[in-house]
Image (cartoon, rainbow, N blue to C red; front, top):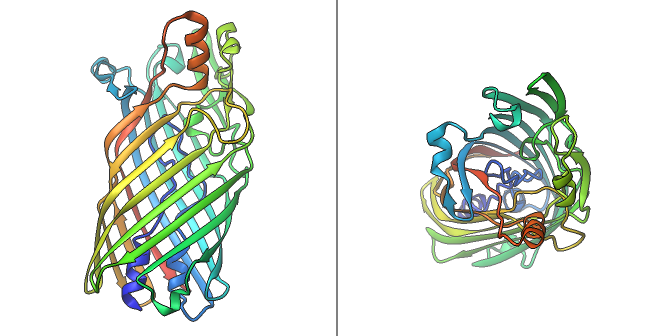
Length: 359
């Protein structure tokens, strides 16, 4: 059973803001860990598991499509985001197949730029607080206590708009300072009630080698949250025309897969991770400001398990970053006759450090 516990822990899903890549607001939806860990650690069909994951990244490299805008760093005009988040998850195993979980993210952001402050110098805006809380239920396809070589788990959840999506700070202008909503990428929530679908699976190939896979999709039916993008000022006529005067409430998704190799209490993992904010949502409209984008990373990790405690570390490192064309970009391109695509800043890597504790 110990082998299954270790394998399942490597099936952790970090949904962070992360998830994760700077100006592309892949926001942590309160998902520190898929409930595979908690459920398998309680193969006696009852109990709780506490999961804590801390994540940090710095985004500063700007992209238009997949082309890096290297001149931004060279000229010192890049936007720099620092994000430190802690995702707190508590999983309750109900019986052999069913479990339920609640995920609470606590997020701290700093964002420095010139353009948001009338180019009068580099100034910083910040945000701190609880993000959007998520509640989810999970079920196994097979009885995990029988330790099948293959098993999959399906999860359905609700994301609540508990994070402050109207967080404000001071912005420098030509005539002084004003107070206005901070950038979408460092808002603590998106203002929408969303619905999540998850699929987590593993395949054992022997005592030491196994494979894992995860799929996560957040459906946000709300189109816009009404928060101004004018940073305390008045939105321009073109922003209103292109619908970028208010923030959108976008979907987001993650696909992840790789291999685990166990050596005694240690497990080493390696795989690929793909995160995205789509330009168009599955349900609802697509107007409003968003920076859609895609990030492909390689994800090495290491886990140590002893007694009731598991420690883990992963460092997803970007190998592809793509700022895709948003729906407002498409409107602008159609009206002007010139193809337009905005930019976004991405991180080189993120650091995920955490533990899972059987209570």
